[in-house]
Length: 287
Length: 154
Figure 1 (cartoon, rainbow over the protein chains, first blue to last red):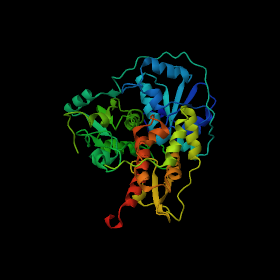
Figure 2: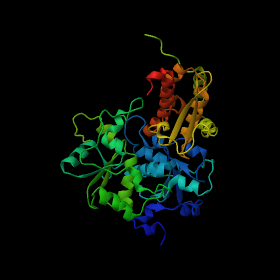
Figure 3: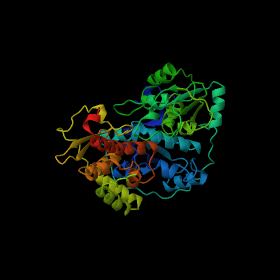
Figure 4: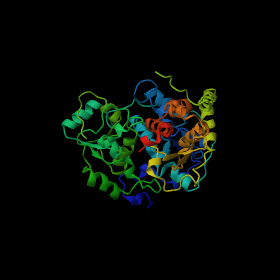
């Protein structure tokens, strides 16, 4: 049993270790994808063979607040040389925050064969493993993308309102200061991009980064995660859960944890998140 | 109403130079080179653990900033970036330190936070923008505070 398998996850195959990645650097069936918040990181050095997927340029619609469509996703997959059966391994900065965000977007298009490198970029660096500034090129694939399906894992504001009416579970993964609304009022510093502070009524506050071990960025064990989400937030595995943050990126990390590591079958990410809810007229807010 | 002070000429020149590099990849490489020049705060200025009042708010790269008065009454700025992955924060720190230290305080205080977009472009996450803009805001706030009469400081 591998160390990751010993942690008791519902889907241990959703994660790979840095050792596994090191053993598959030259595996043509595996495509390493680095996705970061900091645009300088990938060009300054990355795992050999890894391509970059940038969340602003590659995953978002350039005009509307939305994700790319089928054609955009298809061209992205073709450009990075991915076939439907390619195993995509995502990793990145901020404890894989952006990597899980990219994985969530990939899932919207039904690309199931995607995993996260446990510990992310920082673990690979701390272990002193090889990095390169060489940007690889791969032959363009003939990937045929499906239409994006927003129904299963994405929530929109009207669905969140219905969810409130039905007393569904909500997890706010922002920091406690954002959750309480305190952070909107810091003088001389930029605000959160929302007119009102606070949280969606009934949401429990479990900041996303509590799911990882701060020393090496690896995910906590299933038992520890259950302590957070079932012990503190009182979730049950079959709950209909909506997670949110500010724009849906941090909450995609929690979506990954609940869906893949704890096996929750009904988790949606509200990517409108607080930048939408905190600006909406007339919606309920709690502090 | 008095005219708003301009930003320091040195910073304006650096921003001009960056604007001459419109290619995103080239600019990123230039910023990586700038980040490579980052020097941690000298021990005579501050030692770890750093005080919370020097922490840049909203900066996930855990940047800290200090201002030290010079004999001419102007300020030198010093930075620490605790997150080893905080390469953009390091680049921003180098730009602020090199271009705002020793510059007229009213001009430093007037540097707008959105110079961040002139340095990095607009393809930044909200969190990253906030952290970098907070670095600018904190330097400007330190310059503003240094201009206030001593009796009004708390």
